Image 1 (cartoon, rainbow, N blue to C red):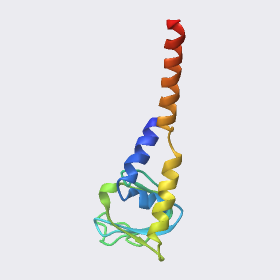
Image 2: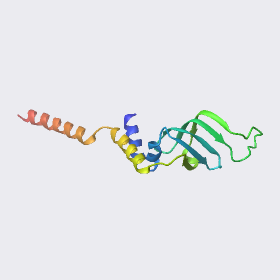
Image 3: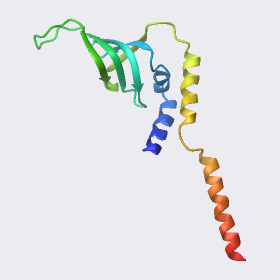
Image 4: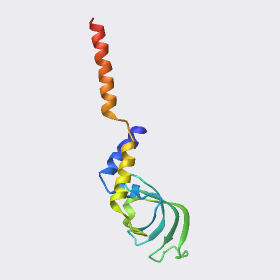
Length: 134
């Protein structure tokens, strides 16, 4: 589980998903491919850009054929699959450099320090071989 989280973080740094991960907790609007608009606070974003929002309000752009109310709908939590996202809008000015730096710092804290770990284990292996040769 830890390794998969590390790989997801590594993958997100290579895409713009890291920008959205840096915007967690901020107010935003997401426009879907069917022109539906969802406004709310970003709770989480994974490396595939699947979004989870809090206090989301959904504004339907098209009249729904189900005959239901076409007015805005409020949800406490709302999940948006990446394949339905057209645009992401932010309600206020965003300093992109600081958001990306914050996201990358957060990513750097996740995962083992591979080179340190491998070098220590390699030295232990060498010490064992050296003591068995005597």
